[in-house]
Length: 136
Length: 136
DNA sequence: AATAAAATATACCTATTTGGTATACTTTTA
DNA sequence: TAAAAGTATACCAAATAGGTATATTTTATT
Image (cartoon, rainbow over all chains, first blue to last red):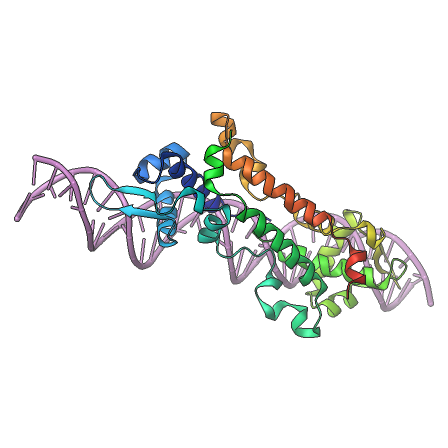
């Protein structure tokens, strides 16, 4: 029941960019060093974040990355989903061919886990990066 | 953010055993066929469940498996933890050497995710197998 | 216009985890 | 005592995670 290490790194990157503010631009090397993420891997993550609309990239000399949205409008869930894909806690909830619902028209496990998933998503949506920056 | 397929199977096994009641004894082959779990894999899962104290095994002719506790006293969390180990949603929360708390004495991501983890655990603890058997 | 500093795209590699099997053995009861 | 069950241990293959490499493109500065 874990998110990937990549998503974990991504949360730290977004938090760093949130801390410096939307207008600041930081290059990948700086991000990598300050967060202790392997440099090549940092680039890969930043690419996903940019494609997902959370960050902006600036090429060329003086280039780098900045947030593409306000910290307050980015939640834990947004970041995790951009990196790992949709939140779903077991196979049954996304791949119907593995689910008893399909075979016997009733899958009690399915129902229970779906409730858990909903709660998890609500919790991940309830925290945004403005909260995290401001928290003592 | 997913539990393993093994844990998913285990939930179905415990639900099946809950449905037939604590006194009934079912052999592995029957469990495997009724839930569509590969037979050898079923045995492996049942061994973990027995070691974890959730089921009892009976050897020899007429042997099989039954619950070792009442359905009401087994939660989703119990089953998942017996199979997958402790619930923890990122590396930072169980391996301190990867955590900024360790390096800089503050890890805001850590704190936020720990809250999420708590909520998740509470949710998984709130559902027991008596609930699941009785639900329509 | 040339250059160098940055990001981008694509593809690759390796270790770990997951899902599943195989073999040899032990216990139990008819 | 034989057969039907579970047990222990170890193995294997596919998928995923984590990370790297190479070649290319963009852009500010000179």
